[in-house]
Length: 243
Length: 243
DNA sequence: ATTTTTTCTGCGGGATCCCGCAAGGTCTCG
DNA sequence: CGAGACCTTGCGGGATCCCGCAGAAAAAAT
Image (cartoon, rainbow over all chains, first blue to last red; front, side):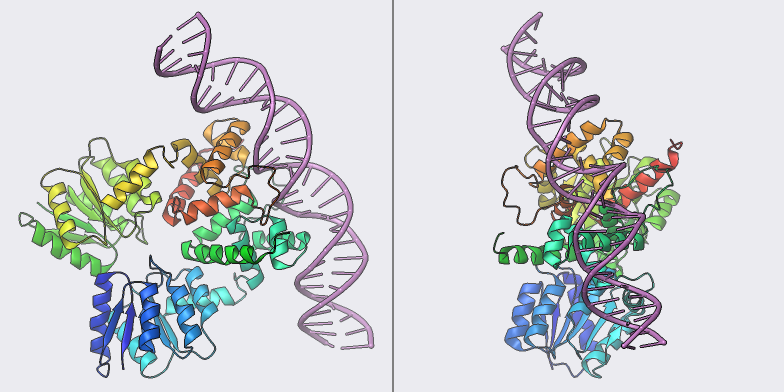
């Protein structure tokens, strides 16, 4: 059994390497990649089925890498080892995990033991392991309590990219009015809505821009989510026959 | 001579500790803090004049911490040791460094030797050390080439926070029209401006929102910059007598 | 199958945004 | 002092946004 590490910080890489050797005596080889690109390549070439990776690498996003790896070999087991439990990351991951896949998500702040336990659970016991903090995010995000619908999230991304109502309508096959409906919904859920009447406009906000701001502050959105969205968008634009 | 480390990642902390002991034999004590708050406190209590810190910590932003530390004792020497050379960070740092202060900015990806050299230069030789990559950012940002004026950056932040033209005008003591002028300028510099006429509006953009998006993608803005701005804003709002 | 609930859609209007045009200001430089 | 560069401000108008109102369509519940 071989394990592939995809992580750009050399310190963390060697720490992981050690942890893996310690936790998995049955492992007879540890490979390292320092970014998503070479990680993908190694995974492909070596048919590694056991991967530990960081989200958020400079060269190529962890989520991107995981997506293509899973696309090629859905049975691959991946342990995401990340600094953050941003909703954007958690949502990003759970969006791409194939049905029935074995994976894990543990934070770098977790203890040594937690990490080693997770390694064994995933690679030996075929059991998913998700850190409590992350699990918390997941539920908050999927449950309706203070959670966002797929539709709401989608439109949030669209305005974060800077699209107009019309462009969004076009992209999502909706009428302009429907887009605006979804927007209102979003504004309400983000607590940005101005209940009207109250003319204590201390600092009046541009709802559209404000929504993006609070989404960022609440980590519903982050840099890498935006990057992915931007890539999707330009792909879609290229596919448009020009009207 | 004592050195204070402010860094939330335990791995990096112990690595730093070792590097400091190796590079600075004249150092007779290394202290560690795992977030900005306790870092500030330790700096104050122990009157440490030599600090190495990470930007981007969960508890309290490195820039915030540095600001208050420098406010209390401007002669403190600080080496920023960060993962990123985002323009937002670089600008944030150079905005708060006191006149004549000795400081450094090196990336975590730098070699062992670079780090140790920087430590000696700053703490012993009283010389500023800024990594090449960072220096590059700095010049791009301060020089007029593809760089942003203070005014432009300011208004960028204001729209990123979601303020309306009017609110910005009020906050910055300008007329609404001037705000809009600055906005146009910003749009042009961000390459978002629609030269008019060209009706190939594939995906028409909402300029205001789009500007924020590209600023984020280009890392002119990032989460921590936004957080700081948000804090400033609400402080300002609280100070407003309500009109 | 019928009611209830949710979502989609058009209409309309007030607020806001985007920006060309033009008339002052300030500041520098020859 | 005047020319030129730059910033600020008012005016005006077309485009966009925000959203209440209300009917149509779809989905879910009974």
